[in-house]
Amino acid sequence: MEYDLEAWTTCPYDSAHRVPRSRIQNHIVKCQKKRPPLSICPYNATHRFPESEMKAHCQNCPQKPLEVADNRPGGQITVPKPILQREYLPETDPNHECWDD
Image (cartoon, rainbow, N blue to C red; front, side, top):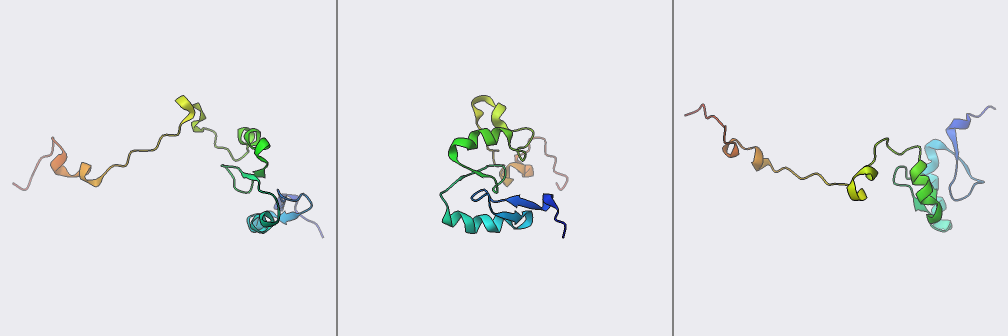
């Protein structure tokens, strides 16, 4: 029987556990209950590492988007301002023309 190596992955809690990639999330849920806690990668929840290794992993994570808010001043992620529907009502537009009058 021939196995596709890309379809299998190693459990982050026990390197002896080889799991189909499609089942890794279910396996992690079960395996984490029996092991010491690991930090979860913000880019891929199946990436689990000790706290001491997490910063290095986050810098080189293959799931990390190309552009991340790390380059913003202060390293803060800005939250978009919610736009209320009333700001779009024609009555609030100074250039609104009323054709019904």
